[in-house]
Image 1 (cartoon, rainbow, N blue to C red):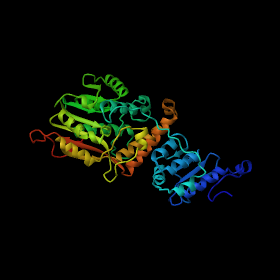
Image 2 (cartoon, rainbow, N blue to C red):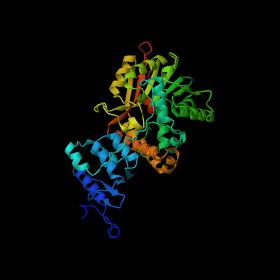
Image 3 (cartoon, rainbow, N blue to C red):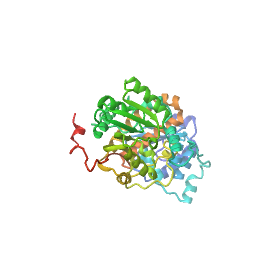
Length: 436
C-alpha cells in the first residue's frame, strides 16, 4: 500500500507495479517535511507518482524529482552549493513559481541532521552527489587588477545576446526604479537612469565618470538628456564592444567614450565633476573598499558628488563562512558588505554622506521581470548558453528576488560629497529629484 497522500491513477497501477524507490522517496520526504507548513506545493516523481499540496493550499509550484538519490545526498549535506548543483544538473526541477521554492530551500538547509539520522534517512541513497562546480579558472592575488578582470569577464562575457533576451531595451543590468508595481521594465529602467542623473544634478558641459558602465545605458542617457561629457569604464570586452556600437548609433561619439579599464588605472586627479558607480562595488572586496573610496575621492573636483549604487548585506546578517552557490557559479570573488561598513570607509576617505536610500523592493520587482522574461525565452537561452548555464541563471535570479523580498540583502544608493572649502553647493532639499 502506498503511503498516505500519495496518488497514482488506476490505469498506472494496472499496467505498472508501484516503484519501490518512489515509496522510499516519499517516506523520506514525508519525514523531511513533517514540520513544514503550509505545504503549498506538489511533489512529482518520474514514474508518475504525485503528492498534492496540503488540503486547502493553492499549488504555487511542483517539485519534480528526477534523481532521488542525488537529491537525498544534497539535502543531507545541508550545503547550499550541493543543493544548487542538484538543481542545475537535473536531480530535480521546479515547475511554475521557482521563487516560491526558496522558502522550502531555506527550510531544507536549516535542518541539522545527526549522524544517526543521516544513516536512517539516507541509507538507501548509496551514491553521493558529485561536485560539478564550474571552475572559473581565476589566477592571481584576490582583487588584484588581473584577477578582477578575470572575474568580471567570467560573469559578463557570457554573451551579449543572452543578456539581451531578458534585460530591457537599454540593457540596464541593475535595479530599476518603479513609480508603481505596474510599470513595465523598459519604463522602470528609463526612470532609474534619469533618477541617477537627477541625484547627481548633472549639468551641460560637466564631465561624468561611470565606473562599471555595463553596456553604456547610463552614459548614453546622461549625454543625450543632460549634455554631459561621459567616460564609461568596464572590465568586460564584450560590454565595451556593444557599448561603443550603441554610442555610434546614438550619434554621441563626441560626448561618450567607453574604455576597457580598471578604476584604479584612471589617472586623472580632480578631473570629473560627477562620478557614478552602479553595481560595481560588489566586486571591489571589503578589504579594498578604503582604496576604492580614496581613489574615487581623488578623481573628483572639489564640490563634486559621487553616487555609489550597490548591493549590501543586511546589517543583521553574518558574514558567510562558506562559499555560496552564487560564489561558485555566478559571481566569483564577489563580496557584500553592510552599508555601515561602506559609509565608514567613504567618510574616512574624506566624503560627506548626503543621502542614503535603500531600493530593496525595487530590486525584487526588477528580478521578477528578469525571471519572467528569461523563462519566456528559455529555449533560445538554452540554445545560446546550454541547459546548465540557463538553469544557473534561472535559480540565481529567482533566489536573488527572494532574498531582496525577505530583506536578507539590500541595495543602496549613497550620495557622497567632496566638499569645496566647507561649501556644499547642493540644493537645500531633494525636490529637484522628483520634479518633472
